Amino acid sequence: MEGWAAMMELGLFRVNADNTTLSHDKYAWNNIANVLFLESPAGVGFSYSNKSTDYTTDDVQAAKDSYTFLINWLERFPEYKTRDFYITGESYAGHYVPQLAQLVLQNNKITNQTVINLEGIAIGNPYVDYEAEKTGMFDYFWTHAIISDQNHEGIISNCNFTEGAPKTDACKDYQYQAYTALSNIFPYDIYTPLCSPFSNSTPSISGFDPCTDSYIQGYLNSPVVQQSLHAKPVQWTSCKYTLTFNLKDVQYHLQHL
Image (cartoon, rainbow, N blue to C red):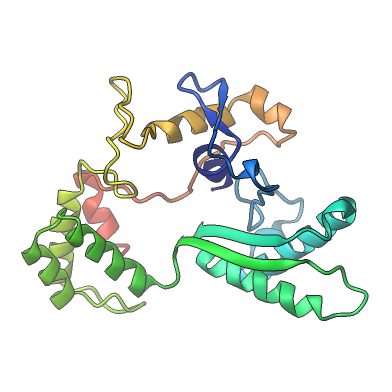
């Protein structure tokens, strides 16, 4: 996801439609702060390890690894030790960010330990738990007139999104109706046109190019780019598992919700 963050959201550059050249992002966070991107847990993005055991991880281990990285980074660049430090993230960082922050605060109390001057955290659209995520998603689609009152009521009345709860046929049917309504909508930005492979993409009212993800994929998979980044040759992808809302995929995803 760091490729997204760095090249689609808050980073210095945007990838142009040629998948090769870059342009400056005038809204980049580094206009007002130093920004450090960390690929976590081990194995995502261009990160890798020579030990297979490093790929068996969990939230606790991810926090420990991230903390170790931060300590080592500050030791290498000590001029940043006294700077105010903020941890930010989105989505599953609803777990990563607070757990890393807690570990930082705990270890700051240890004598002769490098102190990280943590001032705060920020989490955008956090994935905190499955029930809140699913209920909130369908509430959002309903309040933005994407799904009908009847469809929303059917989901609320028939679906139990508690982790591990069985999914009834009625719940699956109502979710199917909801995803049908989403078949021609980009669910992460409902006001953005879909990226079309058959024509030039049409920017949204915000100026965002809906084909940006495709440009990033092409750019970060360029051998020249990977060599310039001193990255191990790899097939880079933004997400190993990405939800799609095409009708042909709905039944598959309903079985995994």
